[in-house]
Length: 395
Ligand code: NI
Image (cartoon, rainbow, N blue to C red; front, side):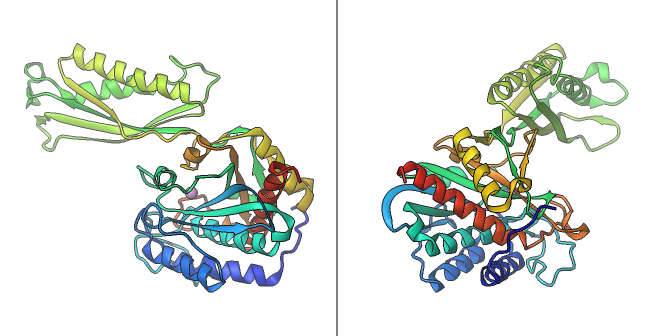
């Protein structure tokens, strides 16, 4: 474990209290009414001015530096997951069937910390730090495009975010130039035929189950056979249903899953291959086949200048051991990608493991985080925003 610079106790206690309260009231995407209200009260109670609602439950808070200058953003997501929490924490979810299992409660606390610290340090910078609270990161369509449409990014020259990471210890931060997460595309294939029939005589029917299984087999072979083996991609079928009786060939079989690639070009290519394979096998066996893609999430692609600056800030604040250069992009998805399509910036991974209880993976019913990571991340991200602003204003 690297040496950890200690954050002021009051900041630490403030952020932990906020995080624990938010943890008890998890809400799903675009339904974050109590969460948004709690955040608004937290900010107005501390003398911050907040924006009107954006994207239903989102809003922004601007913290102005002592001198005029550029504007940069710091974004937190605010939604939870449909998971029944299985921890024994005193601040366990009070909303049955919903849980902050992806650490967005921690993200909100860190963002609150960035606002507090930026205000304390206003003499250190020119320009504005805008803290963005975004709903619905976990669902599709997600909250980021709605925030952008609502003007949350207007005037920003860069944007930053973190994601908690239980695979790294508290005090370590993960950095990656270029792609950090994969581009994701949910897909659905429906195989249909009016010629259903008796299981005894499949030759008189169009066996939709047989056709669907052949499509599934072919889809599994696309990655690495028709794509360049050097380009990371994964295709997983997660749902397959059709039929009812054990002696009737069904008229319809549906399957679906997700396609994930680090580069968007491979994703587009594989989408076309899914259409081609499913269409060709349907035509071969006289079944109707529909393929649809339910909305693509781009990859989070960190821009070099901003990541390098952030890495330097972490090394200066916490020492070189705090910097973990990530070799691989995650095949997970993250809608922060939409912001990075508009302005430069980066997402940083924040180590949140402090022992066995805080080592459960994201989206696990026992997920929890070591709260001592919160003030450290707030301190780092404030420094990142301030350095960015000062670099832009030539200070
Ligand atoms: Ni998340």
